[in-house]
View 1 (cartoon, rainbow, N blue to C red):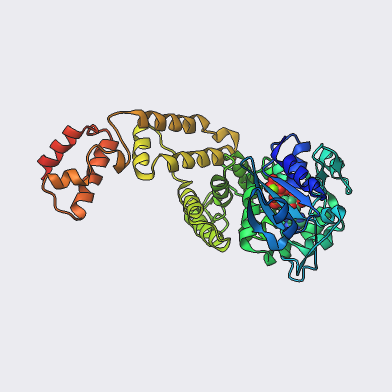
View 2: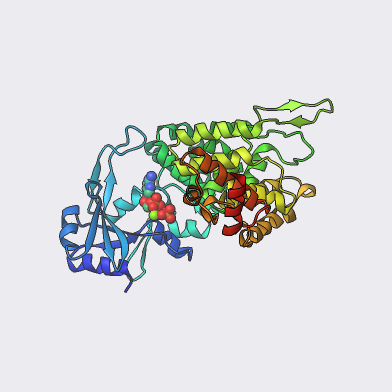
Length: 437
Ligand code: ATP
Ligand code: MG
């Protein structure tokens, strides 16, 4: 028996109902592996605690009716049927009421494809036509879309997120309501917006969705507004700026950092535009302007620091010329480290593929990745201090006194080793240090 089936049986043995619900039911019918299993029940929170007394449980959000039960090592979220009260602030229900009706619980859910329940035996409960919408690949609000987006504007971003991730179309009334009420996204907590945006960016249809609903993304990233229909007016670019941005995102590996960097990479262009005598547009400094924009927006969205720093690095350097030979790659490896350099090349490749085909340099980008692999395997080279065969202690043993000179010497050694001037061989390096003193 699957862990969720055990959980449902456990509820039934206590005389309660239990159903799988939400994303896992949707993903089951799409033949996709479920991210997580959610169970919905008429058992009240305190009753659940008694029913699952023999299990390890985490009181995730007991006030809102959610208990996480660990079953065979798998966390299953069990939530009491709910009806949400009014949403006077457009972001949180004023109060949460528990309910004894499965249908009521399904009714409060955002989209028909997310509002289906399934029994432990696989029988489906689908009061809003979610199954049909799945077949037609449609995102449709449960009930009146205007009311539903007015209640909770996060659903506007969720609509584009699911359209992107599932490669679905947003049904006309739902899309109209999303656009009409888009300003309400500003009411939603930035963290929740950021989480939806990152998921949307990693979806397979992000290019289409970005081009169809740029105004919705612009509620969180206003600079997107200026890319709509923006003619780049440069022979290297056959697409307008929004299309170029959308294609760069789509061409990047589906990782939030790379896709955020792709989204931001050229947002500095409209602000740095200049024309030469021949009427060709240039965007000098757009990478640093883009970095500024990315910093401001990522901070606003409460991005974690790692994501922010990686994205800023990529945007800042996206426009530097590609390395043309192995030694140039070696220099960059030393400067940026292999992880960042690989990401930078992936972004550059994606950016390049979003230009006119006559400018594709895919082979060079792929070659740079091969050079990285080769250089990292070279026994005589290394690119980080930690891989150097001598360290600060060795220098002190040779009479260096503690302080900045040690760091400077190590940096010097690393430069020589990374550029192939000296082998990363302990004896040779110690000899070099002795002679340099
Ligand atoms: P994922 O694959 O990302 O986990 P999911 O559909 O499970 O997708 P969650 O954010 O985990 O999405 O939400 C679980 C379920 O809760 C949804 O399927 C939906 O039924 C309901 N839900 C989540 N957020 C909302 C919301 N803002 N308004 C209404 N219902 C929501
Ligand atoms: Mg989920």
